[in-house]
Image (cartoon, rainbow, N blue to C red):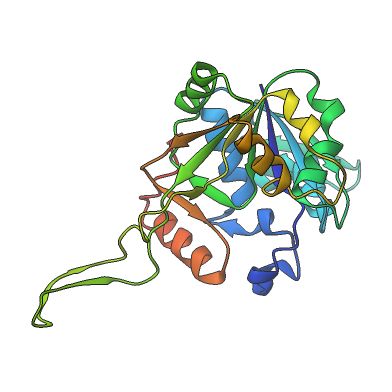
Length: 257
């Protein structure tokens, strides 16, 4: 089953980083967040990736074209124009890097790679979110429910702490960043049947709008409720939060360690 990763957006809310590179190449620890996402899928045995490029996509192409330079020690012999790789840290990945247009919307990007997917189910996620979601259980859930789309549903934590007050305005307890208002949101990490392509019109189709709304009305979207860790790197604050987890060596999404 191929893994599609949306990596073409401009990431305007993280402009401190994305003026120079695409958001999926922003580093968490010492690796791009895109690498972290791919490592998670690979941990569960999914090693064939289709990266949907757009804004500054050549940065991502360069990264994978020279992956051994980024991951390994090398000796470069200038006289013979040769490179010797030491301690190669290669991955068992097949990576297709597809330009899906600078201004394409999410649905348009997905539609553009239909020929690379073929007539088979596929995995899909965003290039800026990490989670400790069990991909094997997600796929199993999708097969059991027999829907066109399975979406991972998550409950993001609130931005601020919450106070538990009694009728006299006395603080009974303080809860550090509880789970929002209890609502479930789209957390990415989809499993899709190839029929989903029929619901995407053109480059300007937003996958999360008409396609998913129509599929929901037809009762063809199943929610896989994930109660564990999930974080989208939307702002500089989010990046700092993820880096703190990496530096403490307690990153919950690093299931491969």
